[in-house]
Amino acid sequence: MTPDGVELTVQSEGKQFQPSLLMMDWGPTLGAVRRRFQDMARAEFRKQRKRLGVLSAEQETAIEALLMSTVNKISHRVVAQMRRLIGRGH
Image (cartoon, rainbow, N blue to C red):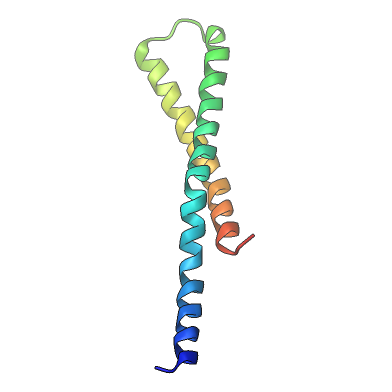
């Protein structure tokens, strides 16, 4: 392989690997965004808890599961969009 061919191969491989590097750098941040959304939902539940009256442990667990499911559905779109933007180099 000629030096020019080697250089083209390295450039090509670098371009293909770059999105993976970006996601590795941003992966922890995207995870932190999702956890922050979950923390906000839990905090709001604690804040509003008294207004719900007497709940069994099972009911509280069901409410928290509902909140986490909702947060995950909402944050999935946000995180997916962020991943797409990062993948495009924005």
